[in-house]
Image 1 (spheres, rainbow, N blue to C red):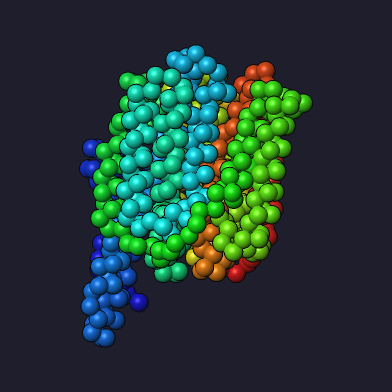
Image 2: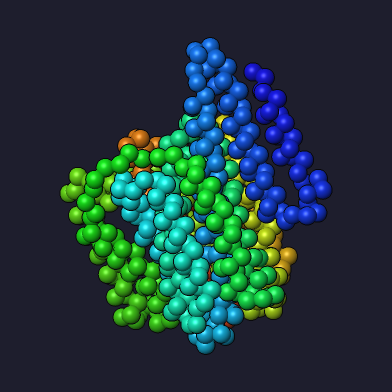
Length: 513
């Protein structure tokens, strides 16, 4: 079937941006955002052309098309809000040496700026199902935007590490509210045949953030102050928030639910206990009581949650989602690639500064090529999921992960800037094949009534994987005598995880999602 002229035009606009005069005036990141709008508009216009013809035959009105247009804007705007939150998350990683000197503390203490933020995000995501059932979706966006602005203001005027940590936790609550909404909108409001493409486009925006963050944070820190990084992003967040509020449809039906305080407390105890235990492993060693006590408490919390939730009619996160083997496999791979990715965005910029003696901007910029590669590939890999299925796509991605981590392990004692750029580029190519596609495939293997629980599980694990990855890498570096020996130990672990990802990819079903 021939596509409408608007579809062809939008494709030409998207492909020609790289060579037009706009590249002289705008940064590549802004151009990628414009391309994202063009891609979303293209899908909308193609769909609109077909639907309009069908509607004319039946005498239908344009209400559905208008609703689809608002949904596209809402998806894009919420993705930009999520981008802002994740951008600041990794922007702080490259400022750690500066924060250590300014607040007269250790790297192991400063890393809680990221770890605490991610824990706040994960904790909020655990209760998004409850929040979405009690609040109008538009009210949820207003609340998230307010928390993001408040947290940013606290961070910008912080006078000590504790105040900075409080501000980051507040912003973590905002990101925890908005991140699940992006993919919930897609899974509920977008036709199944187009979900992979939409997840890829939204994922392209969000995937930019973890690697653009160090470049952004490094540049602002080097030319001004790390405090300014919180101020500069505010106009973008405010504009995106207004667009989201104006266009946001109601995603989930409203119902009265009693908040499961006990379940939330047990699950939170489990997550925090394990993080603190891993963090103490580097500071106190494996035989220390301060290491095993939080680990044991965390394990007991998780066991307690499983026992309590299995007896509840409406648990915080329904355990029945784990009855699907394919869902569990997708969640495991999703967790693994995120664990490694956030660990690397913590490790590599600090290695570049402390070993190669690069400035904060140059250290952050070393991850830039990988971030753009991942962002550009995300829509294509989403399309390949729709066409070829998860097994082939995940296998391709896992081979890139193995190559990247093997290369970085071999040269871990003397990682030049070129090796950092090349190794991270290979990793992010593999990441783009697996990350968003695992989310899409996992949710497609659940019945519709369990989609909110599955979405909450994926988003909680995304943030928890990042938090655990940062804490684990920090613990390994603290336990070793030099950063180079610590880097080698980190990549031994990451290579083993990559092998597990490859094995897991072979176990996906062969048929398309």
